[in-house]
Image 1 (cartoon, rainbow, N blue to C red):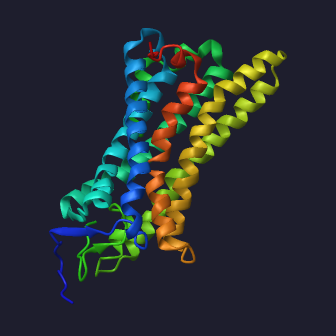
Image 2: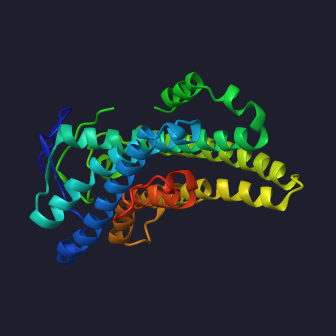
Image 3: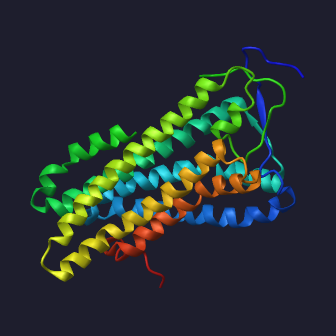
Length: 293
């Protein structure tokens, strides 16, 4: 077994979903369908919000950011996954693999940040409605959007037991000491997701307290409905993300094909469901969607 000491291989080989090779061709069809729905849904959401002046409000600006992030997440991975499943195109260049890892991890962190920003938006809208416009000015929204936004030597087999360049799957191929990279990955993900989750939880505790103090039952129900879509999106994003991340490191008893399949769905299901959830739950968006003749 040869070792590329202090250098990098020119290509890697992505295996897809090890153990399910015989069904790759058929698995690709639902993956492709979800990808098309994600593209159409997020492009529609983006188009409706940017072209409708009445939707030029903080909450919808954040929805635009979310749609853009979801488009990048899916497009950076799914076409390659489909090419593996349908055309056996397993090879990926080293630079492309690094770029793919960058998009997956950086834009996942951005999505978490946008969800936090949206929780703050709901807090201001419900708890400080009279100051909503004064607090969330265009300048503040732009600053929030900007705030949201170690190479190793590799040896031996260049085969990545995954459908895309997932961080730990690539790190396992390194012949150097991967402990710093391993610790960094755990710490970064826990800090980003943990801190965002804590602040989101605090926002919703304050929102819940404010809503329960309202005297009108209709107003309370409307406030809960306003936050419902955001809570659904939070659960859809964080639940598979945390499961995929931690099982990759400690879920040795979980079959590899189950973990990889769930990791693939994590990049597909939230981007597909986000525009559907907001389109169905948000009256202002639903009323402006193009209707069939």
